[in-house]
Length: 499
Image 1 (cartoon, helix red, strand yellow):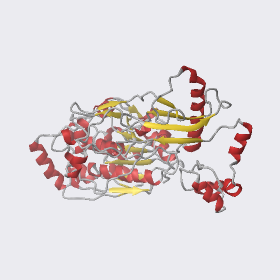
Image 2 (cartoon, helix red, strand yellow; image 1 turned 120 degrees about the vertical axis):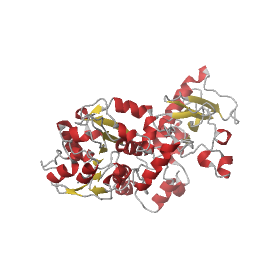
Image 3 (cartoon, helix red, strand yellow; image 1 turned 180 degrees about the horizontal axis):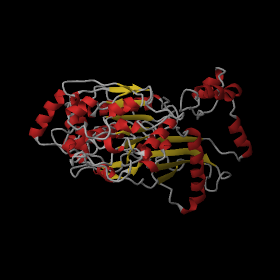
Image 4 (tube, helix red, strand yellow; image 1 turned 30 degrees about the horizontal axis):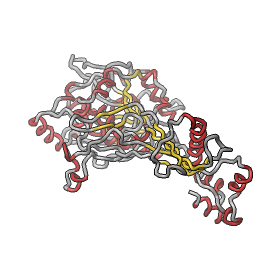
């Protein structure tokens, strides 16, 4: 701990000056916890120790001990035996790790001499104080929940931190730490003194981070719960997938965006003018939602009016839905968000880092007509948030404006559902068509075409704006939005990406 400060001093490097220079490029620049020992090396005495010996009042030096471990970080739950035989991804039963309740504990402590002059009860002995604590930042889902046990009955989670546990040992009289003195009534003053010293040493040795530590996500072999379609539907879905429907992202985002917030905005409109049910196209909501969630982001759902978000029933037909939709159907948390979305007009956009506009035929009725949505998208753009959307979602950009009062999409490259796809699907009676409306606002519209445009795929990145042609671009648009965030995560709240 003291080696680096000593070497820097010996080399004539000023810590304060170099720290100020590094802080311009790095977020985690803190004072070094160690001490410069060059005065001791040159004089042969430690001035602090000399002062302590002569006055009997200065505290003795303490050794600080700490481990803060996310024990299950990046774990797949497969045992060593399963890994050895290459069955990590499908380990079940005895091949999977059974997690006991105490896994994930964190420890810190100090070892120091306490004289009677410092504190009554110290008697000049070497004392060791240990605190066992539960740190939510190291939970299996940081800040949300901790996997406390797993076994035949399935995983068990807890959401409340465990109480601290303490140990106190007199190492002079008890070097093997056989007798925990924490509960001794006559050591109350000593306990208070050592706890205060522990707080001091923690503050000195463990600087508070400016950003949450980017722990790796766990990847249990069981994966998220899903509602799988029957085998015949899966076979048909696979064939449609090969034609271009819901393609896999070849280069998915693999970074970590813990502490950042995403907002997915969906329609409130539930019927077509010919009386057919509609709403948000499911995968245009679920694919980006889970992409953001799996990257560690907090994800909220909003709509122009708030409340229920209707989901187009055709988008949940087993042969047409995607894996994210299967996950949605088994995910009570997302289902509850869909049933009670946030009204977009009540939100403070500065609290978010990106906004995604989901499509579906319902958005053709309310996204381009909602004054609240236009206002909040304009505010998000002024804040420098990353903006994105697919299919009919970019209609929510049409009435948004720049701080100078110009149309937000004017002169910018965008994509959305094409007029050709609208004609091919025979749904031309909707009040707004994205390609037509975006071109009216001066956007530079881009798209791809195939024998049928529902099987085409195209997405565009223009500054902080990422848009996609249809449901097929959902994963790619989400990926590009997160890449923009990760490239600009240089402060506690990432520097906003300006158009």
